[in-house]
Picture 1: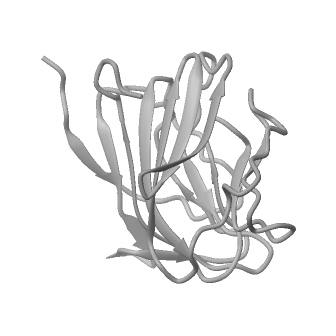
Picture 2: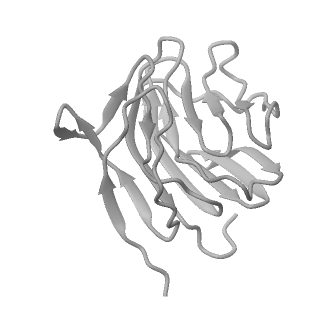
Picture 3: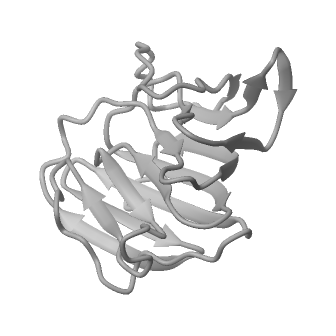
Length: 177
C-alpha cells in the first residue's frame, strides 16, 4: 500500500538552495510559508527570495506549482538549474538552463499570463521530464534524470514579483505521463 501523507513545512526564503536530507518520495509536501513567525499563504517573493522545499527528491516525482508573476520571470528549479517562464529577453521562449536538457529552449512555450495563477505540472522520471501549464504540454525531453536529488525551488528575477500559492511534490502513480 502506497503511503500518502500531507506534511506541512516551512519555506526557505533565501537566495540559495536549502540543504536538507529528507528523501522519502512516497510523501506529499504541501508548502506553507513561514514569514515573520506567522503562517501566510500565498507568499510573495521578490529580489533574491526563493520558495524552497525542505526535502530533496529523487525521480520519479510529480511536482505541482500554483503561482503567478506580476510581469516577467517566474522561475523554478529541480531537473534544471532554471526553467524560466516570461523570460525578460523573450517572454515567448521557455528557457531551460542546466541539467540534462540544458539549452533546449522551446519557442512559443514560455509565455504565461501575468497577475493570474497558473498550475505548472512537472513530471520527472529517471529518463524523461515533461512540463505542463494549465494542462497544456509546454516541454518534453528524454535524458538521464536518474541522478537528481534536489529540492524544488520557485523564485523571481529581473525585478519581478512571484506569488506562490502552493508547491506539491509526490511520487506519480505507475504509468503516469
